[in-house]
Length: 388
Ligand code: ADP
Ligand code: MG
Image (cartoon, rainbow, N blue to C red):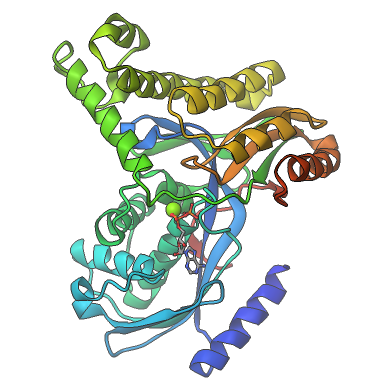
């Protein structure tokens, strides 16, 4: 949908729901990781990129200490007092909004509420980070209504704190950081320890393409927490040899190999994946600007194989999508994105072959699985801010 038409639609719905016109608009993008699965909570590196799918909030400030929030993408909504958030976990999507407000207050900010309507083009639960986009759009909105000065890194940390402690999803910093600090037209090499990033341009002629398996993904399950715990166990055990290590980020591959026998097999596999994946992020940062096709394809291949065999976060639908992508014209590389267990895959595709690639993947994947996927190129859009 064109931006103008979208804005008109949201303004109309706002006026139906709340009466009058919205006065404030915020937006925050989703993201795709090009390399670095599960490296964020191991304090490593990620190559991340914002996408042109984003979340908007249209709002009008209110002075009675309440927020009334609705969404055009989800039923229900919330009408809550800002001074009793501890008691008001709603157990629906509005917890992401409440959680952001809660975390802002924990950081010492006094908030002014609003009537707000959310509209997003980021698909939910597909690994493109609709939750962080909602949180960052919310933080930008509070920034406006409450006249706050938040720098984007602080905003990302506040969103993460809300998602960790209020919503109860123990995610790393990747999603919020990407949504808050993403750059139009480029990927970012993010260092999850220092919370700094370097703009990494991509060679001309290469497109990033999302291939959404449309298969169920459930991270509320135990898998995500289990992976984190296994990484921590690895660090704990290796610390007896290397007292200074704080996270898997600090371990070199040779160090892991020399203590392989001491680690439970599953812990070894998890650690091996993270340490290698971290290195692949740095290697991708070298390869992306020049566009060395062979190197890009190897890095993507190794990342997926590690995710499947060592970190074990693949799923049958992801494997089917990978095969469809690798068989399609113009493909340079294909791998998982987001946390895995279903959701989206990401490809690097030659610009001139985009249509042929998409056409074949749609058919091939549908034949393999009986599921109609979605395939679309994405462009890096600016990080969270006011809707321009
Ligand atoms: P992901 O962040 O990968 O899309 P999550 O499970 O972390 O997946 O977050 C998805 C959840 O975020 C949705 O189920 C919903 O509760 C909430 N959400 C995200 N965007 C919106 C929106 N536009 N309107 C309402 N809820 C949203
Ligand atoms: Mg999320």
